[in-house]
Amino acid sequence: MPVTIDEMEDLDLLDMPEEDEEAIQTWAALARFFNCSERKIISYKDELLACGAIFYMKLGRPPRKTVCAFPHRLRNWAGLKGQKGEII
Image (cartoon, rainbow, N blue to C red):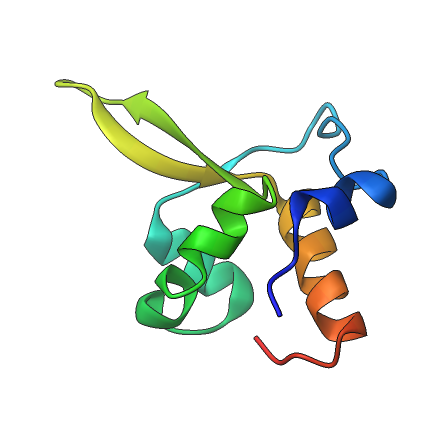
């Protein structure tokens, strides 16, 4: 069962990042964060977007849509998945 944004809000998991925390950019970097394949993490794209764990920014020249995420939100999402007994 997907983690919803309501669950993230109920647990106050949509807080602001810490001052020194940098956003992870690209699917490849997200896959390295979770130690899995890009395909695996991309398969969770809809769920990650729905719960607010990832977002898109336009970066580079010319500007291109790039996936980004803060590590604390990814850890919170993974923790909720674990509480539900789901494996990432």
